[in-house]
Length: 162
Ligand code: RP5
Image (tube, rainbow, N blue to C red; front, side, top):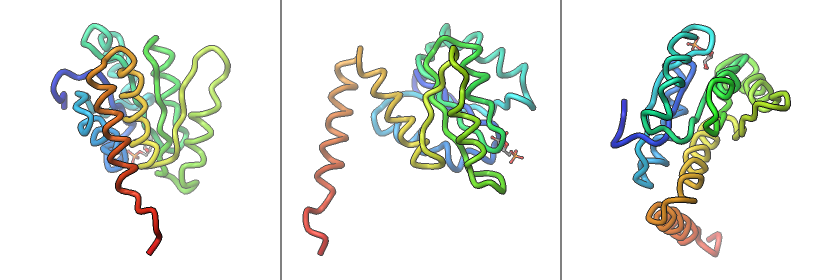
């Protein structure tokens, strides 16, 4: 599902992860950043993973967001197959409620980094915003949109609680 010209890949280990990962797509859409969402499992579809990442840079992808649950190795395996920045989103899809995925994603041994975000929708949203912040370093118009988004967010917070 490529949207516009995709600069960010949104990968997830299962179709069931989309409910969470679409928050990354929405954040990017709000900032007019094209994304490409794919179900790619490190263990169920390893060939698809290798093929996708081999062509990612050539296809215009600049940042990879990888969301997975349980023994979540998707982000780490993605990072092993690309030099692009990989942002990992742990998903609460097992009996351990995401703690398993959080530890699996965050505890990368030194050498192959994965930037790890919060468990669930907040993490997916922030991964989208962080991807935009990376792209904004060399895209002035996007930087302006990101600053406007922050301003609107601040303006929507009432100063008084009543
Ligand atoms: C992981 O296992 C996926 O990222 C998903 O969160 C979890 C369960 O997958 P399903 O059995 O729901 O497809 O690979």
